[in-house]
Length: 178
Image 1: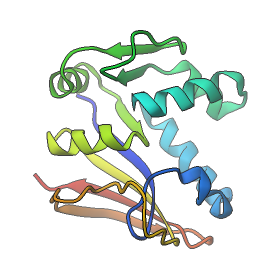
Image 2 (image 1 turned 45 degrees about the vertical axis):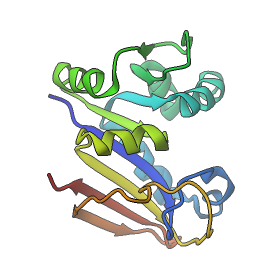
Image 3 (image 1 turned 45 degrees about the horizontal axis):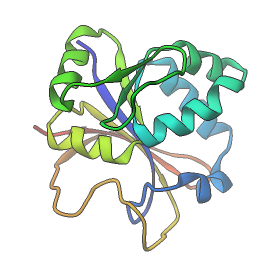
């Protein structure tokens, strides 16, 4: 059975929206190594519509080990509005989210990683379908924006590990307590 791992970039105040606007100043060799190792442990991607559309536009035209692996691996897209997906290896999940994800987890022996996809990740948390949360917490406070943990959602977590990068970014590996 595969694990569903949500990976997010978040600010100190929990904002996960538009990380390309606030995270790049902190990118360094440690961050790159972390993201490469994360992808190496991944067997498939699970993406929401918006993240899928951004990734499908950006990654097929890129080269290098990271892009090559991302482009080769199976990709599952949870969307109620998309009619088709055309990124190589992508499959549209048409049935209800909890059932479709539970079926994916049972069929896979590899980790299924959710990159970004805030709404999808929030739904997976509500349904108890997340096995691990990998947060890169950036030393930035935005004061507004879509947060990873939405208002009203309670979730207790175990901190499996915490690593501080030289840029001040914290890498947290968390497990939801069921």
